[in-house]
Length: 107
Image 1 (cartoon, helix red, strand yellow):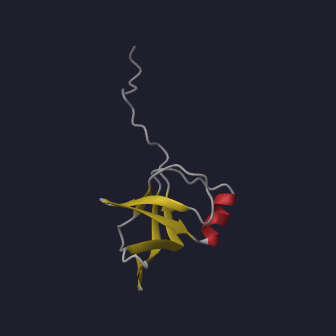
Image 2 (cartoon, helix red, strand yellow):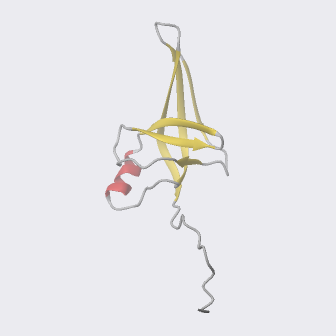
């Protein structure tokens, strides 16, 4: 079994990629630059903030402690599991749609 835990370096963030119901223990889909992966968020403090009304939506950027474990199955395949034990910071993306027209007051 190979196990590695890392905090993403300053400036590197993973983006939550798809809308799902906020649920502890469910694997979420993320993207770190060009790499997509699934990971479970096991940070109870983070889920408490969500339960108390903090928004969490597609496109939000998370700075996290990411733990990756790789193991070989009995059939010889490598299975990789990723867990986020701690969400360090969340950058919420509020306005996703850009303005199509400038509002200069002219009709």
